[in-house]
Every structure is written in C-alpha cells, then in structure tokens.
Length: 337
Ligand code: PEP
Ligand code: MN
Image (cartoon, rainbow, N blue to C red):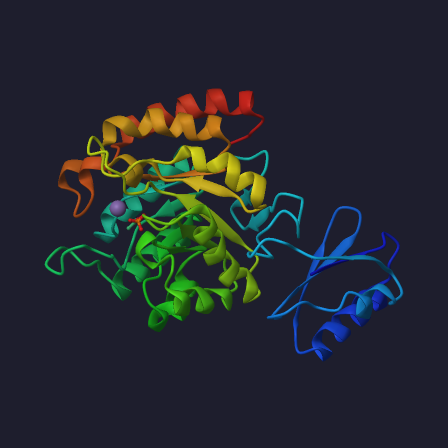
C-alpha cells in the first residue's frame, strides 16, 4: 500500500499517518518527492484497510501496489532514485565509473591504481578483500588486511571504496571500510546477508544472481529496502546460458525492463559479463547506450600477473582509451561523467 500525501500536507499530517501504520504493527517508509510525500507500507501479509488512511488529514489517496516488490517498484516511487555520496552522485543524468583489480593484492598495487584512477577523474575504486572463489584452493583475498589497504587508499587519495561483503560476520568492518558495499552474484539470495545490509548506512551494489530472473533480483533488492536502506544500486554482471564464447552472457536487455519496473540505478559489469578483456570496451559502450547508470570495470597495472580474473581485466592504457570514448559519448545519452 502507498499513501500519497497532498502537496500541502504538513509534517504533522505525515507523522500521524506513520503512527497509524505503526499501530497496525506495520512499517512506514517515508519517501519525500519533488511535489509531495508518499509513504510506503510494508510488513503486511494480507490486504491493508485503505479507509484507515483515507480519512486522515493531508492524505490524497491510498493506492494498492500490485507488484510483489513494493519499495523497489515504480508504482511506489515513480522518480528515479539518486544516491548522494561524498565522491559524487549516482543516478539519472550521470554515469559513474568504478574500476580496479578483482582482488586487493598489495598496498603498493592498490595505491598505484587509486592514484591512476583519481588522475583520470574516476571516483570509485573496486577490489575484493574477501573473494568468493569457485575453488577453495584459489586465492581467497587478504581479508581484514585488504580492508586496511582499501581504507589507506581512501585516506590518501579521497577515492570512494567499493568492496564485497560475503558474510554477516564481517558486515560492520566492511561497512566501515567501504563507501558502497558490494553483494556478489553468489549471494544475491543470501537473505540473512540482504537483511543485514538493510541495516547498514552505506549504499549497496547488488549484483544479479547468475541465474536470477528480473523479479528475483528486484525481490532481493526489496529485502535491503525493507530493512530501511534505500540506497541500492543494481548491477548486471552476466547470466549463465548455453553460450560458451564468453564467460557469461551479459544481459543488457534486462536494463529497459528493469528501468520500467524499478526506480533504482543500474550499473553494468562487462568484465565478469564477458570474461575477456578484448570484449569489455564494446560492452561498456553498449551499456551506456542501453541506459545503464554506471560501470564496474576490472583494471590492473599488469593484468597478466593479477591474482584473480586477469583475463577479463583492462590494463591502464586500455582503461584510458575506454574512458576517452565514454566521455565523448556520454553527453549524447544525456549523461555527464
Ligand atoms: C567481483 O566483482 O569481483 C565478483 C566476484 O563479481 P561477481 O559476484 O559478479 O562474480
Ligand atoms: Mn573478479
């Protein structure tokens, strides 16, 4: 249920609606809009009685939300979500780049990468301190030491940090070390983890599960929003198909329907999406054209020596060339970088 307030509704009217929602044992989500405030209701298992709200002062109307994902739906919030970060804004009319190695490998490597990115105007550094690897014998990441290195990069250069949280145990330390918390494809339906990041006060980058439908992905986002964390960025990273010419099938065709159904920003990860660095530039440009709000790119000064995912990682020369092309094209799609 969505309660739409009149444009002249006073704060006390909004507070009254929130009280009535809470008295029913339900959760109120106040969403200020350009002209009026809307209040989403979650927590109900059956229908909520509209008339409880329609009689309250300042209420314009009570609308049933038909989609199973409520807070993530455009029915609930027609305007695109904008996320404000210290380093800049994520959302409509912008195109945000996040780049860096697959894993945090060493302090020297991370500082070199952070400095390069800052010199090119890239505001976010990605790298995993905790790595979800298919084999238990592969490099598992530096863990807490990796987080310390990332924080050092932020302190020295001001760059924003995007890093993965794999389990609830490390939620507080990852939240502290990051500007955006990444939830990986293998954890998209780890509901305990989703509930935990719903309590965090940092934006969450939610990667699409490698076999998740759009509805499942949006329901996963709903878990985070329902917990009170409204700053969620979706990230398409490729899905499993019969195709074997690339690591995954980067599903750029999910962007228009995701945008139609949901107000959250969407990034694209063409590195994991293709698995081959040669294909990353074309798919990055295609993501911009398809309506993405940003990219997550794997980049490393010497990809052939990277501890993980070197084959899909751009070196700095290739990254710079891609940035130049993106900067040229972004204005044609109404976006600034
Ligand atoms: C990553 O971004 O490093 C990563 C592990 O991605 P994914 O969860 O999409 O495989
Ligand atoms: Mn990787």
